[in-house]
Image (cartoon, rainbow, N blue to C red; front, side):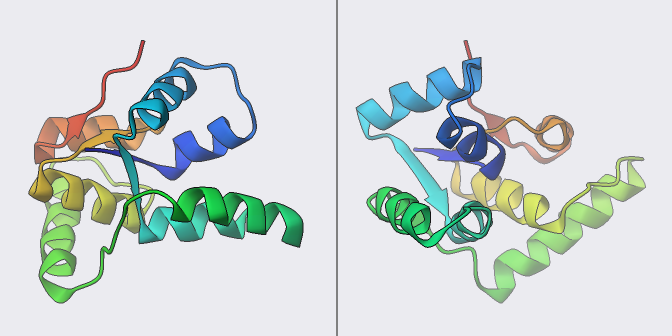
Length: 132
């Protein structure tokens, strides 16, 4: 299963012409895309009005959605964040480290458009979905 990050969802829902959006469309057609609760929150908090909120939430809730809660994952993500800092890379988002840790631990690929995930892939064993 491929998990799509907020960076891809936002571009895709705005109709951006980009390789990661093309890949998203293919994965949606194949029904092999998922999201996680934090991504659901981030995408929905950015919508402009209630009508758009209902439309987008209905679309997203039709997909598999992973719950990132739990202390075990939080501990692993905190360790990963600290490891990345020791290696000279400070992630801009703790949520992104949590998402990357989840995907790495569960063996899911991550579809993204955020340069921080490339560093996490290099150091955390995160599999990044191919684009283009």
